[in-house]
View (cartoon, rainbow, N blue to C red):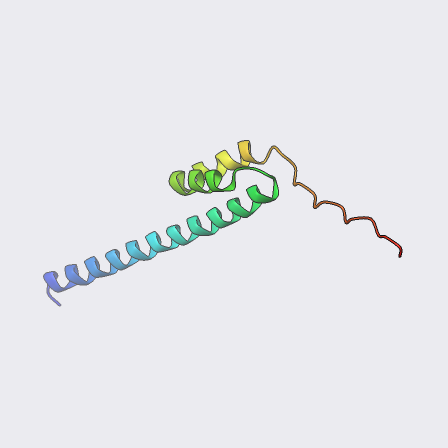
Amino acid sequence: MDSSASEGILALFTSAAFLACCLAAFLIDIVLVIWVYMDASKRGENAILWAIVVFLLGFPIGILIYLLLGRRNPTIPPPPPPPATLY
C-alpha cells in the first residue's frame, strides 16, 4: 500500500470513530434528559426547564447542576385514595 491509501483509510477510520463517539454522547445525553424530566416531574419541579438545562449544558455539567440543585425536594407521594363509602 502506498502512503496516500493508508492515509485515506486512517482518515476514514478516525472520522467513523469520531462520529460513533458523537452519536454515543448524544444518545447518553438524551437518556439523561429523559431521566431528569421524569425525576423532576415526580418531585414537582419544572420538568421541562430542567430537561432543557441538562440538554444544553450536557454531561457532566448539566447533570451535576441538576443533582446538586434540582433534587432538593423529596418525591411527592401520590394522593391518598378516597375514603370508602358503605351503601
